[in-house]
Image (cartoon, rainbow, N blue to C red; front, side):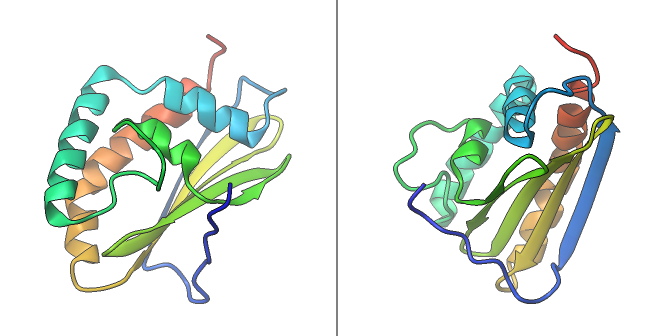
Length: 149
């Protein structure tokens, strides 16, 4: 990927983490992210598509440069910060906030961590608006990795 993500040198303004059992012990963190995102339910695709339309009207990024489509798979096209056997992390700079999502694994567990840095006043209200949906989908993704499908 040609784009780079420069992480902030200060602690995030918001961070959360979801951990669950990992049924895919032979998969890399990137592959776990791909499997989790592939499990995204239709209701979330609908809500995310609606979010993308509203975001475009507000002048926010709706996908990384050169990426078509309005689904959550854009998360896999964000600039990569780390991609190795222990973790996959990618991030995006936006108008109101910067964020990263990180997938780590050990033999038995998988963890998805989100970190957010506000860039201006609108970052906090935006996060508060999307946080309930964020919690639903990230917890769904972690649960989707409990059993091989």
